[in-house]
Length: 170
Image 1: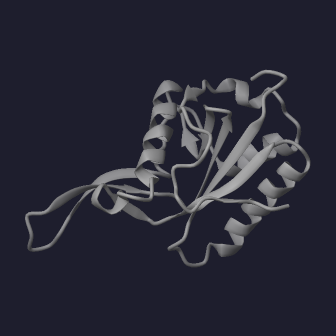
Image 2 (image 1 turned 135 degrees about the vertical axis):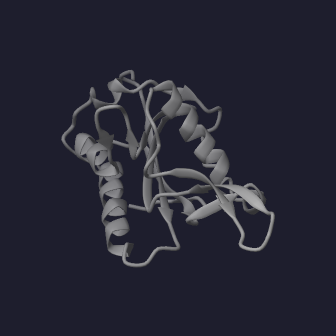
Image 3 (image 1 turned 180 degrees about the vertical axis):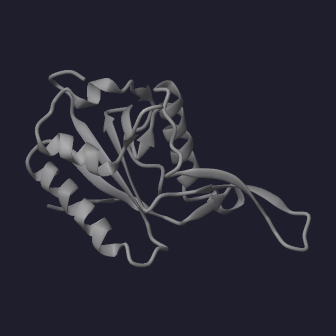
């Protein structure tokens, strides 16, 4: 991170859950507030992803491409995206069909500086879990060095993969 860093927050919300709307809105409002206070130069809800995605289901949405970027970042940092993100196989009763799927969390947050993916939340290392709330608390408290504990990866893009990304208006 440098003094001229311009952090962008991409917030991912799962749209097929019940009873989580208020919690998702609280996270959204906190991100909006951080942007309004200049912590983030840009923030967006990067569309809604569904609970489970397969390669066949993901031809247009980009959810799995986003997941792969997140996984690359986690690998570089010695972190895991599990248990919030779960990669597993799905079988169909009475059929020989088996598919690899990714189960997405209710809320996740990615922090970018231009084409660098700085951090993904939630994630875990050998000792602890870093939640979306932990990240927002660090930004809200003004801890400028908090992101320094993570290594960034180059993603080569400045717009979300998900087609329905919308900017958060403040």
